Image (cartoon, rainbow, N blue to C red; front, side, top):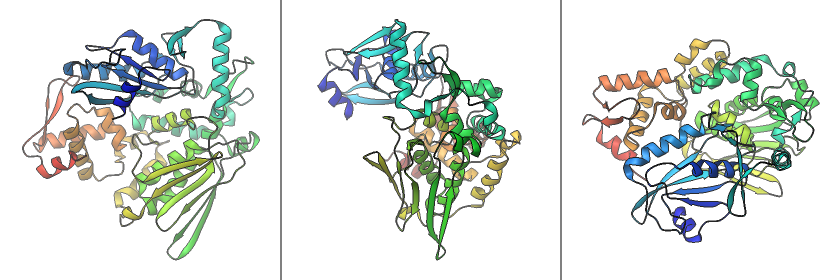
Length: 454
């Protein structure tokens, strides 16, 4: 386990230990903010500064997890909000939590205060020149964040902004961004901002990449072109896509769907798009070979690809919570080679339900009622089986997690759970907020055993 290696190495610039036996201490949030603003790192809860492991009280762990995840998505605590990776481990027979905090392309504030890591300590920045240097460093590393002071909302396509809003609501019907007007939506998505060196305000490079008109992309020299080829039905099929990233995501997914299946194709497209450097002239190619799919392209100059793009794709349900098996990436001299094996899933065929979702997705920007009809990548029976498996693995799994994992609406999940209850397969113990799922004896034992396999 990685936690044991980090404990043995001791605290340093990117590893911090916190006791937190019964709850979250304020300095945990300060350290999270500092890691986001610096080079990222790991926080081990349940470990003393000297490396001893008292562990966390088991009864406190659900509340600690809930408190951390809610804080990460609460704009009154962290601004901007972010996704926090939490993992529970057992060290010396004690339960600990490992928080993995990536370096962010943005500057994060904790209740209006900005923290960074410096010489192994968490410090608060107060001097204006220090803040300006931090903003400038973030902006220089990630070209997705570059401010274009003369780029305006009319340079974007109205229907793409509507599509982004619709996808956000499809992923989370209660998301606060889902009902904003265009300008506030772009601001909340961090697609508009300020250049802290010049004081200029405007839209970011990423706004044009995601939602720009084709003429806008050409004028800002955004290289979104990708050349694709595959062998299909005994003939070579070629396609060249050169457009905004929202359209390109769907086109690449459709091009790879017969080879990878819809879910894996979407994951491949999302990783490909989020890792590219769009200011580089190096040509991007995707090829479907006999045993795998490969993509070659210029890698992002940022240390972590394009984190803001990744975050927005995830909010819109276009980036998977967990990357599929068989996906690998190598990077050398700024050139990336992304590869996904498809030999083992070649025999999978598309269902009628898969084909129907294409029609629904096309209508999403215009027909809000379509959210209730979108059934993701599973038949209802398959989806309900997946829900039971998630409940078997984690009896406190949330509705929101099911929505993100299965890429359906909250209404669809609630309808499925109601059916499972009527079939006497699952019951709810306790409140909606603090309760848990219990699988009844009617639940197929073989299915349950399968979920417990490592």
